[in-house]
Amino acid sequence: MGSKITGFGAYLPPQRLTNSRLEQLVETNDEWIVQRTGIRERRIAAGEGTASLAVKAARAALADAGKEPGELDLIIAATVTPDCFTPSLACMVQAELGAGRAAAFDISAACSGFVYALDIADSFLAAGKFQTVLILGAETLSRIIDYSDRSTCILFGDGAGAAVVEASAENGVPATYLWADGTQGGVLRAQALPLGEDPLGVRAPQSIASRAVAMAGGEVLRFSLSEAPRAMDEVLRRAGITIDEIDWIVPHQANKRIISGIIRRYHLPEEKVYVNIDRFGNTSSATIPICLAEMRENGLLQKGQRLLLVGFGGGLTAAAAIIEI
Image (tube, rainbow, N blue to C red; front, side, top):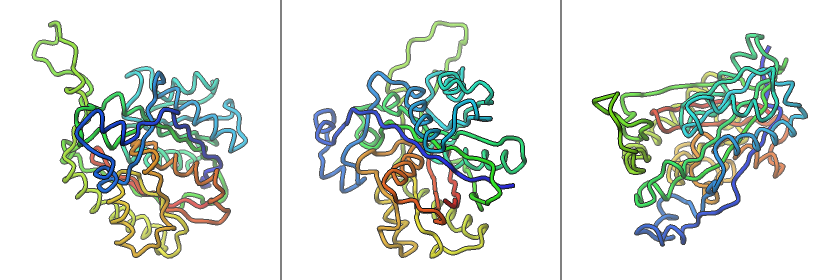
């Protein structure tokens, strides 16, 4: 028994944060941002939490798969920006969808999160424990961004993507690869709770600066340019195929320079690599499923195609998967 992705969905909040607007908030300009990141605008969830975005993406994926919420056996949500510590994002989505028979839990693997979730779903399905799984990547990163820090505020946006994965006689996920290096975790960090010497004492509220994303950009870039290709090479080896047998590369949308590095490394035609970072920025765990949903909507996914998904980022983590449509 194998698994196959049967539905894709995404939701992007309507509010756009353009580079010209950022010019009013921090010392930067459109040319500088585009040259270094490839980003022209990103979406901001004004008045919506992560669960709201995730539910809308989930409904779109269920509709694409022709499934009802009551048919779900499991919901896995990947996020670093949940609305609550508990209940989990997955449980909140389960309740809102009315998917009462589904188990539900969250994972935290940052920008590799969707691929991690896919690997977990595939393992459960291959073991025969479930028949239908909903996987999500959803983020409201704008809530943990310091908009006075130009090194980070230009990069991140909000959004959600989802996929329905079903048990199948076809092997629609022929290979996956997961990896992490926690020793480098400090180069991309966002503090969840304040650290205090007296747990019974009264703590002052955290400022945004103390819990915002902090990043050593150069080190993250070096990690990504090294580990993304390594993850790709390993998943291709496990699948027993070459890069030439892949129809689409769908990379995490972190930075156009990283994507360009992947293109050069494998001598790929640009039209074989899906890119939407210019419109949505970096939405962490949501970037890959948003890409997949857009590709489905635009008629780019055809039966029999092979896709290579590759995620990399906070943790630090890297992950890759090959899927067959």
